[in-house]
View 1 (tube, rainbow, N blue to C red):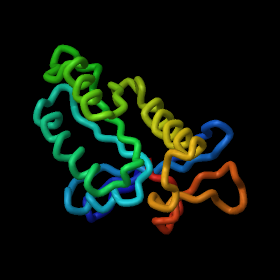
View 2: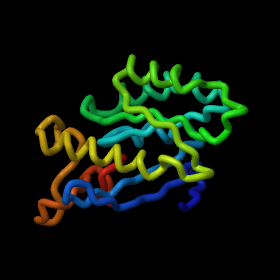
View 3: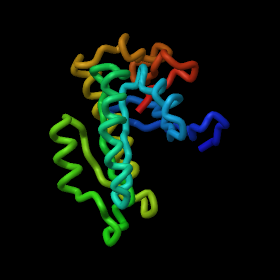
Length: 168
């Protein structure tokens, strides 16, 4: 992950899903005004809160509003409760977050970045859901800037960024 002076940490990863190669890009916000531009053209969005910090969970509705207002209606949104290893410090229950995700038609997982539990699953679930929507024709590829790359029908790329990658 590289640190940028504009306040966003950024990384990318390539995964295989259903015989297709998907390039995922991830960023961590520090300044909300910068982050909001990343929603545009995103095929998948991961909203993360800290299960041991109620304030981070309380801000999820704001981030979700931004995502719904700025991203495509076809974007996959995953709610992720991080730090599930801190059970003794938990301020947000699994049930509460699960209910929020069901009420808002979000996918939901809890993870521990410390132990690595479910971290890979977040990105695989995002990529699998996006590829499934593409395969089923339930996603507006042009609206998201997604295109099949370089004449290879097994590579999924996005055209809205210079890096030409599918943002999940």
